Amino acid sequence: MSKHYIIPIFVPHFGCPHDCIFCNQKKITGLSTNVTQEEVEKTILEYLGYFKKDAFIEVAFYGGSFTAIDLETQSNLLEIPYKFKKDGLINEIRLSTRPDAIDEEVLKNLKKYEVDTIELGVQSLDEDVLAVSERGHTSDVVYYSSKLIRDYGFNLGLQMMVGLPLDSFQKSLYTCHEFIKLKPDCVRIYPTLVVKDTYLEKQYNEGYYKPLDLNKAIDQTSIFLMYFYINNINVIRVGLQPTENIQLGRDVVAGPFHAAFRQLVEANIIRLLLDFYLKDKNIMTNQHNLIIEANSNMISVIAGQKSGNIKYWKNIYGFKNVKIYQKNMDKDSISFNIDKYYDNINLIKLMDEFLKNFQIKTK
Ligand code: SF4
Image (cartoon, rainbow, N blue to C red; front, side):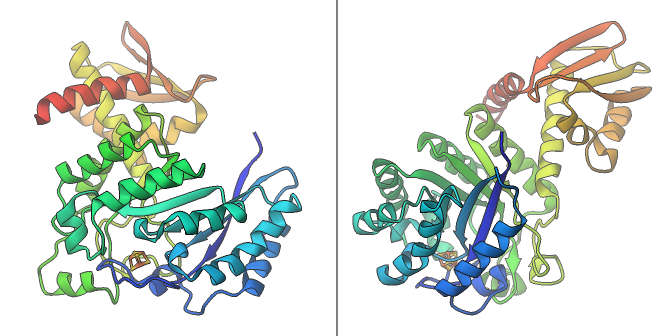
């Protein structure tokens, strides 16, 4: 499979008439000027110079609410990647926008420029969370725009935020389940961070908003990620991408920020699954060795950051030693060897069992 590259083009706050409490587009993108055709062209050419010839290349308009910009400016900006696409130099075009900035006229125009994927910044499908986040629309708009995007034959992307004001684990879980029903082609999950110069920062400073702590954000996101995995939904990002400014102490004032947030979540999923498995099978662990075999891509996820999972398994289960070996096997498979006990399991199936049990427990 050829390597997939993204050429990001940030469209800062350009055309967004809203002021969601968590958002400060200029801070998020690190840019403050309006984007021009020349800049789009320059960015694409610069990136194309770095990529291998047979790569799969996607131009992505990120940052603002692309389709809230006037149609003429949208067309001007899209003309550039469209030209590169027609010349066979890029493969796809994607953009992100607000659910209420989608209508038939907009979609017809995007079709004209051969846009492939539209990502909606949904954040939550709970009415109260949407209202206090000042999103400026209700959840029905999300269902309507998602259907329209699908009907017009675009790929649909959905973004959710975890830990917004008035949010709860149950409400985010509801959003996750509703996303699954909407059958998106891809999803992004962002734990809410308090960014400088936002209304959320003011609420935080005045003591009205308390962000999730890192462990809670990891625990909650682990459940959502497993639901998306078992439903075969591609989760293309978990946690905000660290940049020069997106760092705690810089533009991130507070909240569950970690540069390797996804790795922490995936390591936590392995920990939850092994706990569930060992309890379910009732295996003797004390003073035995735990030997795990897995695909090379899974080794560091299984071990956890700074070998956190290995230390945890030794502490909790009394394993004498925990060894993880690389084996030529499917990345969804993992095998355990504890004394005379051996099993080879499919992680997706185990997630499914775990979540069924979890559902019963949380009912
Ligand atoms: S709609 Fe998007 S760009 Fe506009 S303020 Fe809200 S989060 Fe920021």
